[in-house]
Amino acid sequence: MAEHFNVEAHYESKIKKGSIKDQGSVLRFTRMPFEPKKKEIQKGLRKIATERFKYSDFEDINKLHLEYLQELRGGLSSSAFMDILYKAELTGAKIEIAGRTGFVLEERKNSLFVIFPGNLVKIYPKKLWDFSLEFEGIKYLFFSEALKKGRFLKI
Image 1 (cartoon, rainbow, N blue to C red):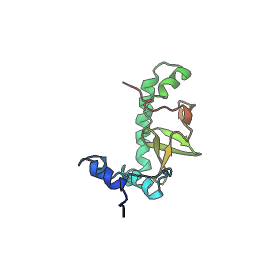
Image 2 (image 1 turned 135 degrees about the horizontal axis):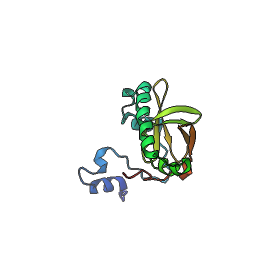
Image 3 (image 1 turned 180 degrees about the horizontal axis):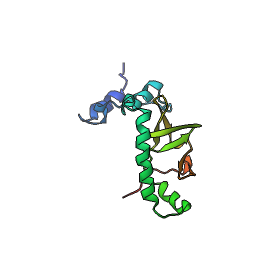
Image 4 (image 1 turned 90 degrees about the horizontal axis):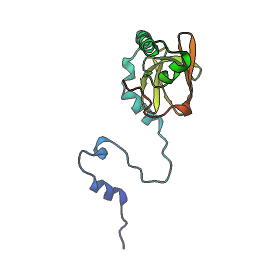
C-alpha cells in the first residue's frame, strides 16, 4: 500500500530555525480564501496593548497633532495644504469615521486604530472606510480608494 505524501510535513522540514514558522505563523494549504476569525483579530489588538490607552489622554495628544498640522500648513492655501495633509501622520488626529468621532490611536500601512469615548478601540481597514478630519474650521475628506501605501511625508 502506497503511503500518501504529506506536503505540510515536507514544507516544515525545509524551514530553518528562526524563520517565520517559528514565530507563530499559520501555514494554510487550502484553496479556501482566508478570513480571520474574531479571535485572530483580537490578537492583533492585543499587540498594541489597548488597555493602556485612555480617550482622555488623546485629547492632549490631539493638541500636539494640531500644532504639527499648523507647522505643516505654514502659509499654504487650503487646497495646497490638502496635498501635504494627505501625506501627514494621522496618529493623534481627531477624525470622524463610520458616523463616530474619535482619535487615531495608531496608523498602520493598511488600517487605522481609533479610540472612542469609553476607551473603545476599533480597527478600520483604510481601503474600506472614508473618514474626515477638521482643521481650522475646514473639513478635509480622506477617500479610502485614494489612500496609497507608503503615503507618508518624508521629512
